[in-house]
Length: 402
Image 1 (cartoon, helix red, strand yellow):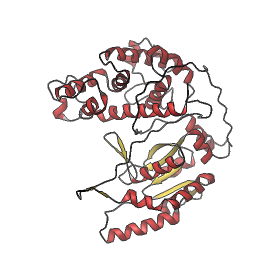
Image 2 (cartoon, helix red, strand yellow):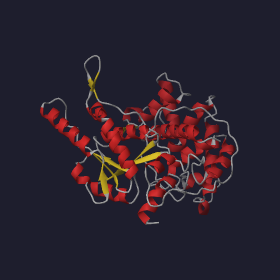
Image 3 (tube, one colour):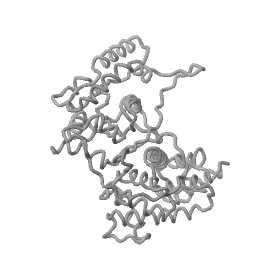
Image 4 (cartoon, one colour):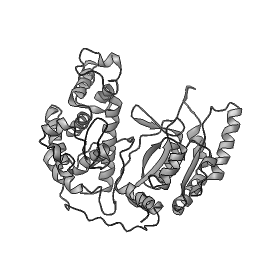
């Protein structure tokens, strides 16, 4: 199999860690059931292309884009951007989840698409910049008409600048190209619905805020396989009292199911154990990259955190606090609980109570408060971490049965 097409296949089987945003979620616990220890996964798709049918079978669409106000950006745990919203609507129309990979330049967009790291380029650039021998520009007529209309409205001061729009796919992805062309043609009104500012009843202008979306890579929906490590998640989730799909969702958030992953802070393996944490849960330095040892250690740490939050009676709520503490450390989460209590909020409820103070922990008036013992931390990452995992868990439970 050519390297670029092999990558196009593997990107769904072994996805990279990504910028994620989450939709509304349910913390409902699912009863643990046993399943087969090891799934023998055999790919049967056409080796010569990775097209729309393969994307739908895997349940995930990957867009390549640039970071910016008209393409994609994050703020306080939410995803924004005109191209992001368009792509989100298209993903929804074909029944899959959306994943975003941010590139640094148009050339990098082209290279990554050609090498199979994404399915679609969707960014604020001109159509002419994406014309390439190996790429097919989608919806060119519709996008050109849209940009002409935008230019006219800008001259008339009807709207402020909205940037450019261009979408492209690999020439070999003919099924995807035809689907996108049809969708863009049938949804021209959506271009304006997203780009024009909304107005409230009081006449105050507000921008469109896209809902948070869940990115949920799954090896095979039909075969009920999330990853190569499902048998280990099933084994060790029983030891910490979690649904195995929740543990899988956390692992994807931590490492993208990359057993050799190392973060910039030095966290390692599938569940991103810090060396100090690994020692605490009896995972030796020479086995920290072992999938089984890493998951076993994470399970032990989750048990420790569940005991730490034993005062939170509701199991669903406690799960939120455990996830937050896994990411930020229990000290910072405890600081947020104290701030919530000081402000009259519930300290045993995550959503709209403690999570709001987690978000504030990068502001000096909060991290310098006398009740705060562990100081500054960037709470938006923890806020997004919890929401992303819970949303992905919900997606896994919807698509993957025990």
